[in-house]
Image (tube, rainbow, N blue to C red; front, top):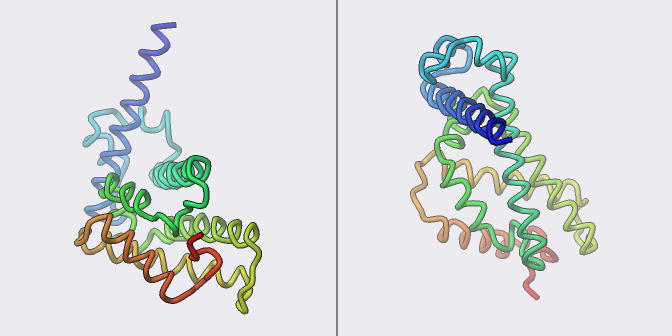
Length: 196
């Protein structure tokens, strides 16, 4: 059993090294310019090792995106269970903390114009979360709830993208507070933003 754990840890370390090397390269150049050899060389593994875990560089990119989105989903779900009514827009600081903790990844995703799939997945995750909240609270807005959720998600991602692209010029506390105020001030969806 101990041997299996050591192998699992070795595999995990190898995958982390591959991912880290890929994201470093991704922040330096477009995905079309990155080769498996580049990744292997930087990760200090051979090409075959990369192909053991990933079909190609696009599969590697997809897995990186999937992992971060799943971690964000998990973070938000944990918060909903732990703290009643403390969803993303009520308390956005943990979201900004997570972005800060994984800055190289998010910086790469937002700075590379070709990665629309990441933005789309992030927007889908946020808009679905908002739709769920609206359905639970009862939609009393004049705006159709799906459009409302898409609008809010787009605005939120726009702010996140600005913050990341500008090298996080404000603290996560400041950003969380500003986002909360923006949504409250504009009453984009009063039922969600109203504090009890």
